[in-house]
Image (tube, rainbow, N blue to C red):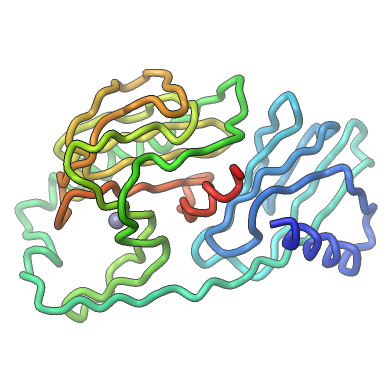
Amino acid sequence: MFYKTIISFVIIFFSTSISFSNDTTFNGKFVQGGIVIGQNKSAKKIFFDDNRLQISKDGYFIFGFGRNHKASSTLKIIKDSNDDVIKYNFDIEKTIYKIEKINGLPNKMVTPGPEFYKKITEDRALIKKSMNKKYIGDKFPLTFIKPTEGRISGIYGSQRILNGIKKNPHGGLDIAAPEGTPIKATSDGKVMLAAKGLYYTGNIVIIDHGYGLKSMYIHMKDININNGDLVKQGQIIGTVGSTGRSTGPHLHWNIYWNKIRVNPEMLLTISK
Ligand SMILES: [Zn+2]
């Protein structure tokens, strides 16, 4: 991680003529699926490419890179006066994703029947509505914990080909654990959705941690919290299940930055 930061500074140094400053710190990996926490105590406005970032009172901010993020990105920090601008150009390392081919699945497991279309459309709308809501906490989410203990049974980004049909890439981390294993909130936040019986996701919880960051917990058995609740890091929000489109008890855990799925494992590494 420290190595990565050095690399980035070197790139900045050679690729921009705009004022170079080392009063910004970065914690995280500049790689597809990666997520980075930055801090600049005198930042007034920050833009990551075209996104304006929310800044905490201590100058913390978060940005991330999607599965297929372009090769480079720009971070612009505007300080007290508008002509005091720092610009960082980052190279984003490419990730090679795993391809998983599974054949011989019953067709109804691969493509839902038309009788489910209405339900699937309603579920999507419900998730979208919750994802569009924004919560601004007063505390910056600096640390993150693994929501449950178990065997990693699916990783971020892998391309699944089921019965020869190319499906959406796997967007989260699968943690297989016995049904009923407690699931904890990865960090403090507000519950944006706690709903049961969705076609694909089954019982689902979405927590907004502020600063563009949301966590999603899928295929749960029990849900212990309600829409609108404020939760603390480590608080038990429910248990592992196999609800929705799932082949066995596991937690599917997603992390979103500005509605872009990033790699949950990257989030855990920045907490160290
Ligand atoms: Zn999964």
